Length: 82
Image (cartoon, rainbow, N blue to C red; front, side, top):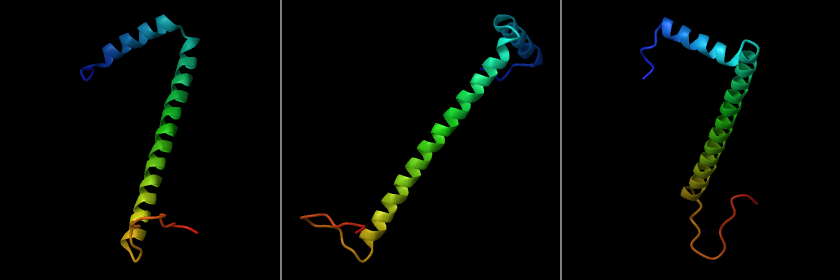
């Protein structure tokens, strides 16, 4: 959609933004956008780490159950750590 923007079109957009927000407001807008992007990246990384950690915990549980220990058949479940 925006793949065909040339230098002239980008300059026109920048001038309109400058006129609309003013020169004093642009650094504030850029700063808040940067903070928002960093916050998004941090939350994405935290979510990714949480999913990977849960996946590793699940695979460790599977290794224990697939190894010498058998899956619980009834009664109380076996504890992995004591």
